[in-house]
Length: 156
Image (tube, rainbow, N blue to C red; front, side, top):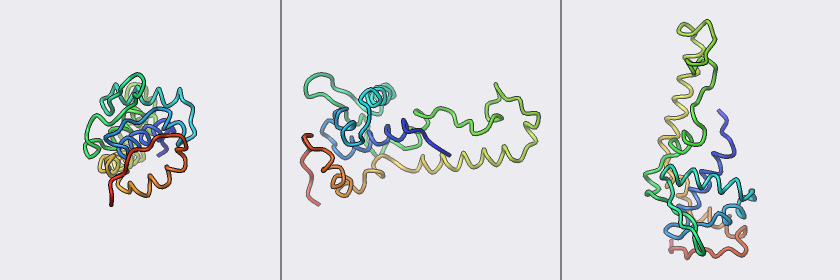
């Protein structure tokens, strides 16, 4: 399986929000840390907000934060939002399928099992899990944040 960079940066945005919680994260923080185009992150943040993963605050001092506890957001649900259906092969989509082997092909059922296993693993991982090594992540991010006001870190 291969995921798009859009999905990767949606997850990175949520991860950063978990690391900075309860403080707001600015779009420009994500742009600077990951070296991305601002319109790309604006689009991601908008979609994550519409889906209820984050809440946004407009204006001076605005930004975004997680709308739910990081333990309550799975990587799988974010991937399904940003990637859409996992039509790995043509026959996964019955509406557009033209394969004459539908229903008897063992290859398509194998692909279906592999896809389900992939999604099952992603559903077992939360945003809290991908932000669990907080100090190491912030240690790597801090030098990239020159000029960004970082939130105070808890001891430990």
